[in-house]
Structure formats: structure tokens, C-alpha cells
Length: 164
Image (cartoon, rainbow, N blue to C red; front, top):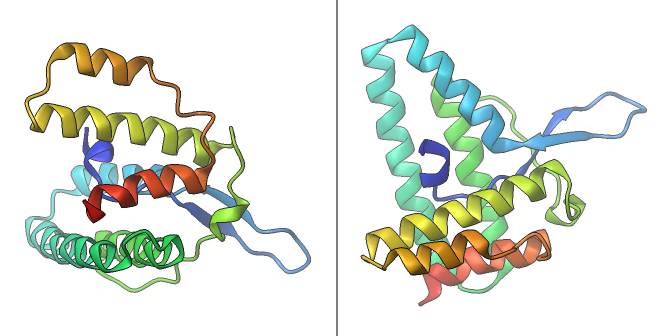
């Protein structure tokens, strides 16, 4: 549920940069899930409070930036990238270099695209439950196939939630 509630879709996180080799990317939500597990195992109350406060500030800033971006996908992607980089750094309360591939590197059915499709459906379920929609609507969401959407189209669907 934690990952589904994140206000930012999975991004193509660069995990390997070696000279002479192509950059490799993975789903940013996978790293966040693993960082969350580490934090839960270590139970450092002071660090957890600092992390949560920073992540709440990042979330507020993301929401402001998305409203400003409107339907400008480049500005929204920058906002998503800044949020996710900060969110990852907040787990260790340190600044590390976090990089993302451009959004056009994500291809249909690759790991980031599949994660984004799944995340999008989860977001729709959360939004419909929050609005008190009927189970019939939830059933339609579960049956809907967003896998035919490009990564950019999925990002735009998410951005439109903030424009309305």
C-alpha cells in the first residue's frame, strides 16, 4: 500500500554508470521499497522522524510543482525526478547522486513501464475509494488495460489529476 500511495510514478533510476557501458536503469519504486525495509528493520526513531518530515516537505513541493506544470510533461517529469531523488536521499538523511534516464528511454512492457501501469491502477483505486465510489467502478478499474499506453501517456494521466 505504501508504494501505491506515493504521489510520484516509478521513474527509470540509473543504477549503473560504467565508462564504455550503456547506462542501466531500474524502477525507482523498487529502491524505495528496499530502503523502507531497511528503515523498518533499524527502528531509529529520531532518523525516522527526520525522514518523514523531509518526505512530507518534498510531497508538498511536488504537489505545488505539478500544479504549476499543468500539462507540460517536461516540467512535470522534472518535478517527479526532484521529488524522487530527494525522497531516496531522505532515507539515509544524506545527499547522494541520484540520476534518472529521460522518460523516452522507458519502453512499453519494460520493468519501469509495467511498474507504472500497476502503480497507475493502484492510484485509481485509492482515488475512487477516497471519493466513495461504488465497487462496480473499482471493478472497471481493475479490468482496464493501461498497458497499451506509453510511459509518457501514463505520466500525463497522472499530471491531469493536478490540473483539474
